[in-house]
Length: 165
Image (cartoon, rainbow, N blue to C red; front, side, top):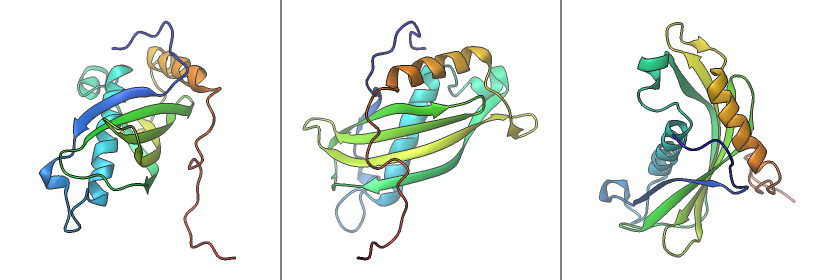
């Protein structure tokens, strides 16, 4: 679990790995579906760090479910390339987290993709939404507050459509 005393006003590095062979498609680059897998690994690492890891459903009876997400594909990334996921909390309330992930090349630092997602806290016994435990919400709020003065990324809240003049 991460220390909750003080969070830096910068996105958290939540996951680091390399692009796997099974993630490559017939175009010779990472398949769109595996970007979501990589971002999910970042989400899982983030949730683990704030106390909602893989054992959280069994130990405390809760979990999170994704409600909505938006992915952008900004630059091709290829087999064996290192990548890093950075995560920031844009907002949270008693039951939801609004997160923004960036995937960057792990050595050169250029942006490959982004993921904006809202998750809902769930009581696994009823499979209905439920408030976060107080300690988890306190941690989420500390991270949100640390990230509050960062500029909002241009892709946040973006709508999809064909732009016409």
